[in-house]
Length: 443
Image 1 (cartoon, one colour):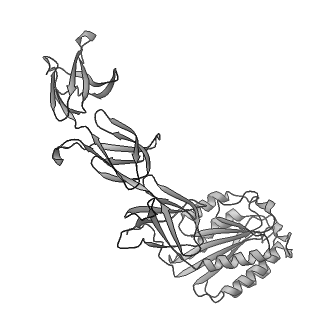
Image 2: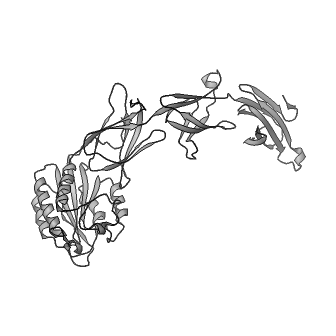
Image 3: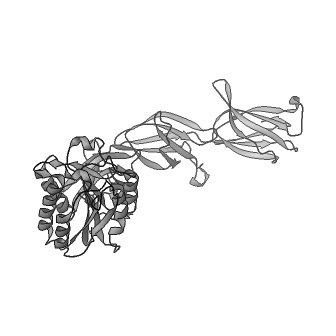
């Protein structure tokens, strides 16, 4: 099974970058103490609990702590093994006094992660509000996610709901803390889950909940940033169970199964082993010609498929090919001459829809020896509809046409009199040739 990114690959190390807001508002009272004091207590307890985890490293970036009216940010403690004591010491000494610089801190965060290529990198922002920050933090967050360096960005909000009127979902997964106890629990949960993977498997099923034997591409998007996280191929056959995926429990996903039309699942979060059934009732569609001729003689028209009453092109398939589509109604265009339009074709669960199209006939057209411009029209419902133009430089042409009543109109290019135009009516019959000589008439 080919994969663009491998969701089952477990990195050897997890790195968590703490970005801490130390702007002046962090002195405001929240719960039992000032916001900064509560945050310091929670972080010190958290670091105590993860000090012995061998596969996790933590770093600390701070903004708003250097001096008043400063928008600067610094990496105070870089990633390193056994740096817990250094982290705790720095956190104890932080004094909020500057301005909000979350966008700058996030922008600089990519340079904080070592470039060893074998770690799961996570950003955890702790703040009492992002609305007043300078810089386009949403644009910065998109750049961070698209870089591929960071798996996920989390924002933990403390303080008052009014300071988060617009949830910063564009930055990452946002959680507002109602109280200090929840703050403590959420931080421990995020750090625990950051070192885990969750097994998930999907089953595409029919209306009787039976799985299909199909292979379908799947793409997993980050729900908040819309960045592609994984892409793989769903596979199932009667001898094997569906493939099991190992997904990140910290990420909320939007998932697209590339059936026809695609199935989209929104806002999925996996915190434990899950078996997910995806209703995908399908039937098949095949268009073929109503004739007994060898494969080499059959026309190879392209077939365009749209959902009924939609202008969006859903799929193309060759004539005589069989393709699966979700149950529903479709409009189909066969790119013959002239095109054949089939409207409101039903695809039913587990059924094969077979559509016959007429076998074309052939026009053998003999033209005057002077260069002439011309066109072919088909008669439908009392009107003439254009089919194709003729080659002005060719003295004769052979053109494949669907059965019907036609007219050909031709006029020498140098002629200035409309009366010099020649026209002939003719009939095309399936599997037969019709000859038209514009000097001698048709037969």
